[in-house]
Length: 393
Image (tube, rainbow, N blue to C red; front, side, top):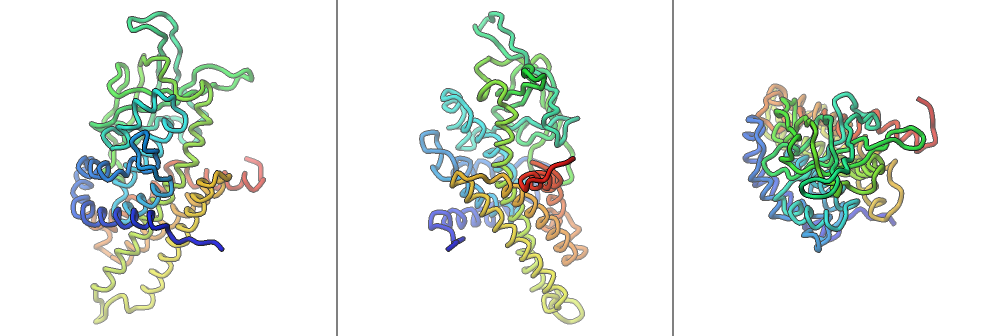
């Protein structure tokens, strides 16, 4: 029989992250959010807890856990705040996992131990200003200059730009892995490769942070590369396999983003249950009105259903089974649940729900990006349709 109960280890992790989120994150994150300030102390605390190293083997400084453990941590963090959750999600799914999955042993030894402790953050440079969901439209280019250099060896010379890159401009950002066109395939198509660009490399510029609608305590920037040179050894994985590598990274990351979306959806339920037990209208607690009860029941239904979807996708991933369709379903279901629950929670809170200092106000602002980031809802529907054997444009 199917059993969705957590193991003792997973449950202990979930409870510890829940305690951290409620006692350490909840009291202070509103101020960080309002100031648009990156919460370095909270990130350091997550590093000390081992959250960044959850899915990494101990030999690289990790906790020896699995990807599902990361998802559980993300869900609990997002029940309180999504800025902190997305910092962890991007740091692991987009910063750590490409190095772990595709890096050389030297690249792993160089970066993973510091990434696992949260001492350093890695970023994922895929999206471009004119590309959006069309990652294959990459214009950033990298040319291998094989002439001898003062340090010896060939260098990649990178020119181009990236947009909406999370964790790319913090004081602890160590590198950005960027996709770039490195040549042409025999059929004339673009040869896209992935290259590690350390922070501070000459020719690599981080633009001023965006003024965002939500995720205001997370770090997001546009990046520019102008004659940026890095060693040939900074190629991540095989030359020409960068696009395929990042598609695999995104599929894996969608399960993590789904967990984050479920956390936000469940956080809306948590806040509403607290509020309706206190708020009175027309002489009664508003939780006694059936209209409110039914609205919260629907919210719980959405969160529960989306949670089952990401549990299913994660279990297939860990068993080594195909899970691309299930990851897309989980991402779509969770982002829908988050957006719908944030809207309903704001309605239940009334005017207070429209105030930024309330968790519900932040949930409402944070929910929309879940229908856009790491693959829009339209892309998820396209992926699901393809997996069902449907074709067309």
